[in-house]
Structure formats: C-alpha cells, structure tokens
Length: 247
Ligand SMILES: [Zn+2]
Image 1 (spheres, protein in one colour):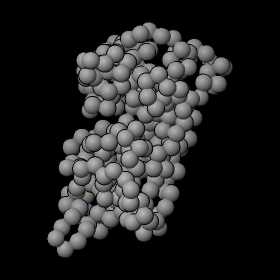
Image 2 (image 1 turned 180 degrees about the horizontal axis):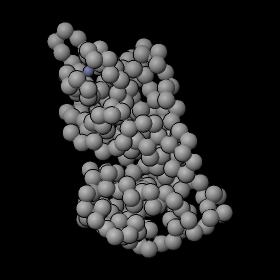
Image 3 (image 1 turned 45 degrees about the vertical axis):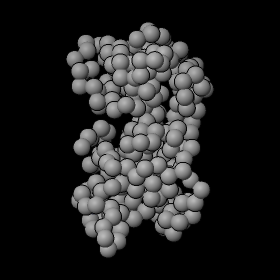
C-alpha cells in the first residue's frame, strides 16, 4: 500500500485556491450504474489499487490520463477490488459492497503529450461508496496527484527541463504551463518549479532525491531518475514522462 499524495482538496499552486469541483453528481447513481456502461472498451478489472488513506483517492493501476479519457471507464471497469478503508471485497456472493457514487470533475493542466501545447483540461473521476463502512473513495488514473493541479507527466517534463536541461524558468513555463501570460510579469520566476522539486520525492516515490543540496539539484536528480525509469528506446523527454507514470 502506497501513500503517495497528501490529503485535502486540490489547490492552485500559485493562488492557493481550490481547483476542484467537488461533486458533479451525488445523486447520479442511476446514470452512473447504467447509462455509461454501454459502448466502452472495458479493461480488465483492476486487481489492486494504490491507496491514499487520508482522502481515499485510489490510482487506477492500468489507466493513465490519456487512456482514461479515451476509454471513459464505466462504473464497473473503474470499481476498486476492495474498499480502501475497511478492506472488504467490492463483490461478494450476496451482492455488491462498493457502489458507484457519481462522478467528480477534476482540473488537469499541462501538455497532454510530449510536444503538444499545454492546456487546461478536465477529467471525470469515479466515486464509490462502501455500504459496510460508508467510506467514499475516488478513483483516478495514473498521472493525477492530489493537491497538484498539473499532471505528473507535466511536472516530470518541467523537472527535466529545469533540472537536467538547465532551461530558464521562463522557458520551462512557456512549454509546460497553460497560463503563460502570467509569466510576463515575472518572466524569470516560476514558483511551481521549486515546489515540484521539493515535492518530487513524494510525488514520484524518490526518497533519494531529498539528499540533493539545492532545490535545482533535486530537480536534476529527479529528472535523471525519471528518465532512468522510462523505456530505453524512447528519447529522453518521453522516458521522463513514462517514468513519471511508472511508479
Ligand atoms: Zn468499507
């Protein structure tokens, strides 16, 4: 069981304002259980999910943001195998314990793929409620981290650019942020870079990063490790992005 991300709602890293629309539909159970199930490609039901105990956000082990958006997994496809709080199996002989509990809209920023323009996107996450312990959990694809508005793939790109390629903050921002205009007032500053470098250990499960001397040194170390995690046949940027999803 991994506890990769912190508790609480997501916030804008620059303004501190909440970024999520918490509930799209609490009483949408009927739609949730039936209407979305029709023409979708249903992946193999996940055998396990990573669990963040504090907020009960689970990361789907098989789907990243791109495939989640394409497939739009229905309530059955995204259902966790077990309740993350009480640990009881979702299915049992006499019925279902984890019921669909609507959808949650979530902002996600950054380039959708390497080389693409950065954008502000939204994604619909699935929620479930345990009838045994009444816990409500949210299932999200790989590439989403609680408290981070940007996709983890975008953060990995930025750490590579800033830490390894030694790009200026302004140039990194131009490539990674959809909010490029804000950079005009502070062209050489982008606080998100330092925040991401400091949090890269938690974000990507890199305990060794913390021993880096400077913040930029941590970014460099994280960038190198993420590249090392990616498939060797890809270019450096794509390796870092895949490395971010490989956790
Ligand atoms: Zn439960």
